Image (cartoon, rainbow, N blue to C red; front, side, top):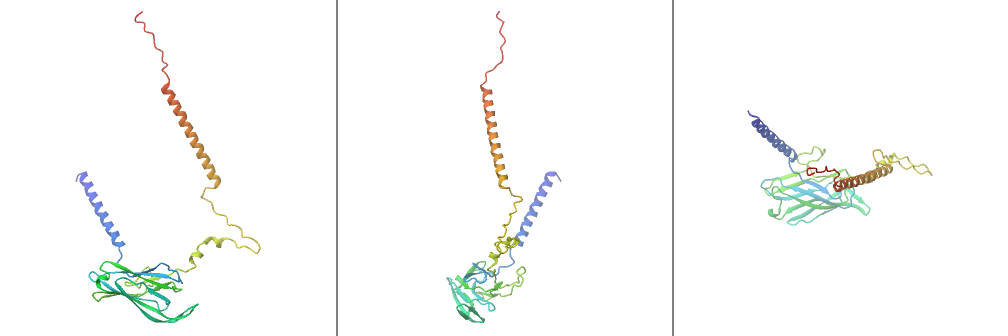
Length: 270
């Protein structure tokens, strides 16, 4: 085979490999399935007011999602649950008895909302195939726990249901139908990590101020280094400008100088 033919064949092979690699990357990047998830604008333990947002995708090819039933935790109950109204959907709540009751500064709360149900008023208002929608609920205070699960059942217009109720014990390896899980952050984490080097500073003894920590400036230019560099830079610029000026003057003089060549006398007519 000629050299041009070999080059063309190699180019086609490289193109096929590139396309196959890109397809493999896309297949890996795409999720196996979309789950019902929950997020919060304030996911701090004990947050007085937090807006929970439940994102509900439709995984069916032809059916419409017409109902969403969200259960709230019984082990770590939430005292106040206020679902936001949604156009085209009705909302209903179910009251449960907290066991154990929630103790607050204002008293003991024994009952509250344990379940919220959104129902589409018609299939036209439901979640169509391949689409998703969001539902928001104002809650508070959030429990003092590492995470809170919200088992959710999704109902379709053809009668099928998807129960997102399986507990998530390993977030890195979730089950096939995990319950929406909200991870909560400790309220003191931000303050504790604000000054991580404070533990390395010796504690002050009685009546003696603790010595100020000496910053590590290795690898950084000091003030004197910066001043020296700035001075050298200015001197370099001045020298460069002077050199350009001298060169320009010399060039101008060379162009204006008359020719000094001596002509020999013409003796042909003598």
